[in-house]
Length: 404
Image (cartoon, rainbow, N blue to C red; front, side, top):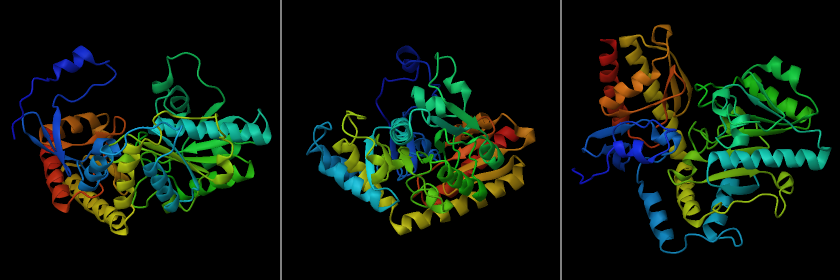
C-alpha cells in the first residue's frame, strides 16, 4: 500500500501547539488491530488510542452507524432532542445502576458535570459549607481547570494561577488516611476504580468497600471516573460491577464512541433533579452522529461473548508477558484487569518505559506508558488471538534490542 502524501511530520512543529510530542510516523489507515503509516509499514495496535478503540479500527458496526446517521442528521443542539441520543441513553441505563444520563464530548467534560452535580447537590441539600471534594494522589480526571485540579498530579495543574478550592488529595488504597480525613463537610469522593495514568493500580476490596461506607456515613457522593475503565475494558461493562461497590455518579468516555468523541455522566433520578434547566449544558452533547456510533459500540461491547472474550485476551497477555519476563527479566509485575494492563518495570529498568515504547514502535508495535516505569497495554477488546501473539513477538524483538 503506497500513499501519495506531502503531509510530513515536520509540519507538526510548524503549525501545532507544542504540548504534544508525537511519534515520527504518521498513521494513515487502520483495520481491526492493525495500522499502516505513510510508508505502508504495518503496526499491531496494543495502544488502542489510549483505551479508546475498543472495537479496533473501522469496525463494520461503527462504520455502518456513522454512514447511516451521516445521511440523516448531524446536529441539533439541546434545544431539541434526537433519536440516537434517546436510544443510547436508554441502553446505558439498561447496563448499569444509572437512571439518568447527561451527554458531553469527552471524559473531562463528563467529570466536570459529575463534580458540578456533586457540589450543587451538597449546596441544595446541606448548605454551602459542605463543599470538600476528596480525590486521590496519582489520579487523573481530565484537563479542564476543575478536573485537572481534582486529579492528583500537581505537574498537570501547577502554573495556571489560583486553582478551584476545597479539593483534598489522599493516598489511593489508604483506608486509614481516608477514615481520618473524611467529614460531614465532604461533598464527594472522586476515584478511578482502577487508576490508569497513575500506573495501573487496582483498588483493594477493603478500600473500595470503605470508600462507599464512609460516603454513606457522611452524606457524601461517590463519583467513579470510569473514563478509562468503562465499556468492557475490565471484562465487566463497568469496572464497579466487578468490585461490588456502586457509585452515585459515574463518568464514561474514551471507548464509549470507539474513537468518535463522546462522553457521558450517569446518575440516579434523585440526584439528577439538582441539574434543573439552565444549570448545566453542552452545545454538542448528545450529538446524533456521536450517539449513533456509541449506540453501535454499546451493542457490540455489552454482548456476553465480547465481555467474556476480554478475560480470555487478558490471559493471553499475562501468559505472553510472563514468558518475555522469563527471557529478559524486565518486569516486576503485571498489574490491572481485563485489557487495561500495566507491566511495571523492575529496579534495573526504572525510568525506561518510554524506551520500550520507542523500541516497540521500531518493530511495528504500538504500546503506551503510564508514568516512567509502567508499559501500558489497552488494545481492542476484540483483537484476535493471532494479533496478540504477533504483537508479543514484536515486543520480544524490541526488548532484545534494548537488552543488547
